Length: 121
Length: 168
Length: 103
Image 1 (cartoon, rainbow over the protein chains, first blue to last red):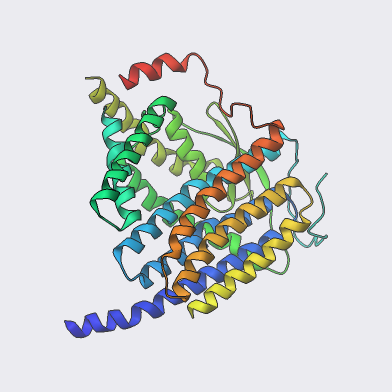
Image 2: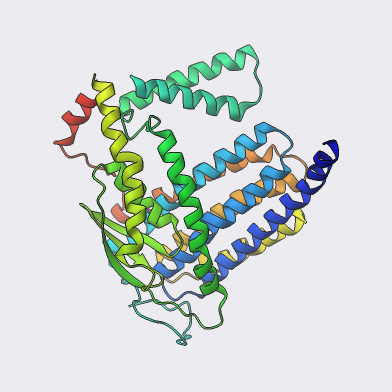
């Protein structure tokens, strides 16, 4: 029984660091998407990768590294708040852009590799 | 009154979890700050079914567990679209009708759509939602039907029960 | 390996800064700053574990709160050009119903 516990204790920090690393890589992927997508509304989708899966995986990794329950509670509070505020902020952004009259790009974009910084008219 | 008790429990748990130092002085300060929060919340008139939705916590937690699985499933196409060489995306605006009646259920449904990568709620008007989707073929009205039904079940049906208990 | 995670987050922050500086519209910049804030929250937490001081998480909690409020404040300002406008106007019909519910 104690051997099993020892193995779990030995694996836990490595797994936690690995999850943090995967979260960081997902954050980079989301950022690359934000840089490459053609207009504001599609960039919003790429940014939501960071808000959801990257945050979840990084915080899960930190939970596995956490030395005490207090830290776990703080991480849970951060996670809950990110999950409540993320979509609210995204919706506020999308709604503000829509109200201001920013038109989304509609239709298939395959192969059309124009400059990603172009403003949609 | 039940909403105030729920708020006190949640605020107390938050303070105890974030502080970590339990000396009498700090506990007294915590009590004062919680009372201050309650007074401010009462003055803002936010302590109602939407401000303190703790009565239906089991249903909402069950809904969240389902939602997290859905979010992770929906992440794959967006990640692929981000890193693929040719940006193979097909953005579209879709109108979605919801069956949710209360504002809280509508908020949860709209936020779930926004939280799922690939779809963002742009506007809510009555029971119609304007959704921007990264892939038009994924954002059919049928794909939102299950989320709509689950968010309605997690809040609305229990909500009427809770109101009857409080008024009685 | 946890150091590599911190470096990955720094790279993501630096790349997102490009979008914040070059974003063609205002909303791109606000989106970049919001996303940047989420990454910084995660980075501060990871940095605490790299340095062996998880107390950094308190800073992280506070940053998450301020990030959300600042995003909403910027959007509100650029929509109304003023902070002195009520964000939500309650319709008169709803007020008595809520009052009855609360009692």
